[in-house]
Length: 265
Image (tube, rainbow, N blue to C red):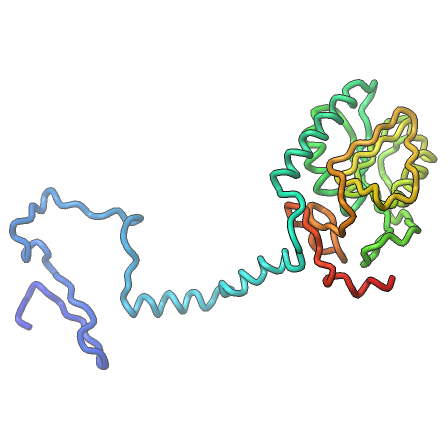
């Protein structure tokens, strides 16, 4: 072409790829160059040229595929039958329990010791103590009872003890769930032997339908609970099945087929 104001880019197989004006103003004589504006970069449409698409695809190929990312997100919730309590409902209820607990702890002559039962109570404990505006000490104890199954063995054992001295102090045991009561009774007896003057229990979920042991609190201890849980196997918000599902922000009911291999235990 003879037009000196234009550069033409061609390819061997497809002919003309693009035309570029070297002097756009020359082909639009009535346009006022002094008042023309350039569209902001963040408002420009993406370039649709084949060459750019090739480069974009090459870049994406070096990243994890979207399908793999989607599979990773789905896997965190795989096996959940339905949501029992949503993230918003959990947050609201934890706030109510924290307010009740804080009001009682303010009346104590010295700071209480909050003892989280690892690992299930870690999310509940973290959210709880951040809403309790009084001085307190925090420690963890590990008590094993379930293993990889869905039913308590009935023979809990303490596998990691406290570092904080609880002698003469009020202790608040923070649990993820209380069902048979075996684990909690074992822990209360253990803390009493360590000299705790009083022991309260604050559990996120309470499943009284499965209670086998009558809980005996110590001194002026009180029982706090977030939700009364129906007799389902639930996971999420710290509760697990075979160490999975703890990171879910809600509480969900696990599908029976996920743990049917344990039905003979």
